[in-house]
Every structure is written in structure tokens, then in C-alpha cells.
Length: 349
Image (cartoon, rainbow, N blue to C red):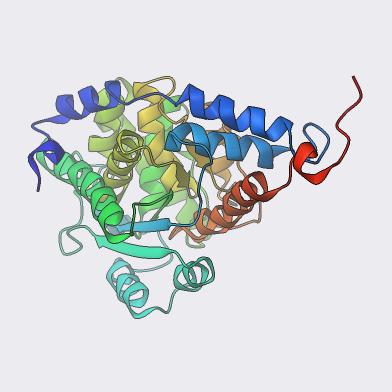
């Protein structure tokens, strides 16, 4: 791994978050000025207008682009899965990774429509995290390694896409990870297990009770998780969640706007929001998941998702759908005629 992607400790990652660059205000102003000249009433394209400006600000250029889309799905296994918190066995994580690699998953089909490059990153699937109800899910070294893995995946994706990625879609796969996401959300924003857990893979009422109990037990054991976002990630998170956090930060450093998928993905990114108030300004939440904790988490973060389609699949499926929306926003912004070029009268003075 290149030296600049190596983290000596969680404190080094904290410093990397603090050093993230801000938006390119000049590019954003160019986008706003251009939008004001397009052949439409001001604001008529609603959020599509702000998406084009957002892309320009975080890419650091005008016009923005949304042709080269990179989708990264991180996969990890969770020790807490042994407590019956999922409708599927832990073996499904590796089986689904094989399905991604064979082209048989939903995300493969969506990437095909987009012409997006898909990268699947399995993270030590043969070594689940520790059971978070008994000990920290990840020690510091394992958490650091997963953060580095997320950062490295962004760099690999930039290298794999000619000219670098215009947009990064992040997603996850991991049996048990909605339980970990619920524990992280509770640690970061308060509440008990029952207020954050949901059906995940489709558990029944007994399974839901087991999930809530696991979250409560984990939070009772790890008091430090409520005091520090990186402790929450280490104590009750998972490798794929840490990798998402690392990818979010590296994308910011590389000036690549990010689309976040559902509940688990947003919970991972929430760590960055807790470390820095503007930490997620270069991201958009792709969709509001059917997982009930996601709605509460979005409210806590004051984030407005782009879509609400009742999805709860994960694997960056919602992010890929939203990438098409961003592409259309950018295409309209770049391709529309101005009042002057079209010979159309502008708004009356």
C-alpha cells in the first residue's frame, strides 16, 4: 500500500478527516451563473439544479461530469450474526460476493445500464469480527486496516477508470450488518436497540427482539462507543463499515462526489459527520431505505435522500439508481441552450 494511504492509528485517520478540503466555490459559482442563463424559469428543474452545482463544487470544475461512475461494494462478516440476528446464515456473504463476481446480482444489472465500473472488495470474510456483545468488534489494528482498505479501493477505482471517476457509489454486503449499523447509530445519536433495529434480511418478531437485545448488550459493554465516533466504529462496527468510512474520506481528498446507499452505508458515513460538521457535504444520500432506522438516521443527520423506492437490498443498488439521476442533472446542465444561444427571451426585468 502506498505510504500516503497508510494510517499509523485511528488518530491518524482523525487527522485525515480534519484535513479534508472544502468545496471549490469558484466552480460552484460558475455552475450557478450558467444555470441562471438556461432556457427555463429559475428553479424549474428543482433539485436537479442543485445536484449539478454540487457536482461542480466537489469535482472542482465547471462544467461538471457524470459519465465515469465507479461503484464499490465492500463485504464483511460479523460475529454477532451467530446470535440469530439475520434470516440468512453468515455463509451468504461470501456466496453473494461470488454472485457479484459472476455478474448475477442486482447491482451488476444496474451497473450494466449505467456503464459503471463495479469493484467488489471482500474484507477477511473467513475471519468475522468479534461478537460485539462480548468484546470490541474490531481492535484498533483491524479497524485501521479496514479504513485503509476503503481508501485504497478509491485509489484503485480512480486508476481503473480512464481519467478518474466522476462519481463514486458506495455500498455493502454483510450478514448481520444492519445490527451493527443499528448499534453504531445508537452509539452516535442515542437511543436503545429497539429504536434503531429493523427487519434487515427479513427477520420475524423474535429475530427483531434478538437484534435489539444484541445492540443493547453491545452498548452496555462498550461505554466508550458513545463518547467517540471512532470508538463506535471499532467497538460495534464492522470491516465493511470502516472501509466505507475510509472511502468517503479518500474520495473527498480526491475530489470525487459520493453517493451513499442505505442504512448500513449511511451509518458508516455518519462517523465522518460526527468527526466534522461538514464531513458529508461532498456526499448525497441516494435513497431512503425501507429499514426504519434509516429514516431516523437521516433525520438525525439532516440529510434529504434523492429517492424513496422502498429498497432494502444494499449492495449499492440505491446508489446506482441515484447515479443515473445525477447523470441526468449534469447532462441537462451542460447540454441545455442558454437564452442567448437559443434566441429565447429571458425573464422580464
